[in-house]
Length: 272
Image 1 (tube, rainbow, N blue to C red):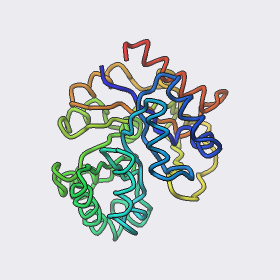
Image 2: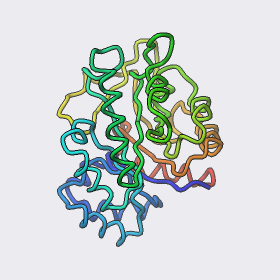
Image 3: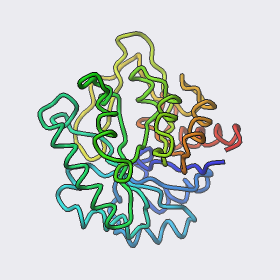
Image 4: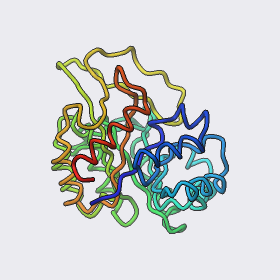
């Protein structure tokens, strides 16, 4: 069975308040790996020591493109020190998104960062939302990215929630990128009605989300619309190395910690 990690962004408030205690709780929940979204005021060497203390693997780190472009060598080296084999670009600011003037330049910038990761014996991934499912010359922008930049430089971190929200089958997309999907984001949600409005909270920004939508809600795994058993099977078929649980926001009536624990319990019930 594939190992299960947690995107620490799910517990960002807890990690900001007390990273050592939060990592200890994550391990007690049954997670064996961590995907970072910042270092919460700690140095790379301190983070490495905390992970070793809690027997947690440094799986990956979400690092905004702007941060990577500001100091490619230095930023990649930080996560190399921690021991992460992967860095993932978690989102694109609006001016860099598909169909915007900077999109083609963005692909070149991502290629440059990918080459730097390779020089440091790491691999760059791209983590999608639903806005990458914009058509460009008859092709989804996400597929345009993966065709423009070879798998030797850029691999996928498919977020199965946003693939589904975009109207595509996450299982089919995982199998489409078999051999190029080392990390898979598991995320569940409930959405009702055609006017449902997904809410983003983007790592590394102070951008405020839109007003609360009553028709879109993140859920603990197994409590939403996603066919998780099928997604787990497709992840294995695609050759994934890790499954990463992410909760953008806790569901109504649950704390972030409760939702993270419930998600791990659910995966255990499926044999993971």
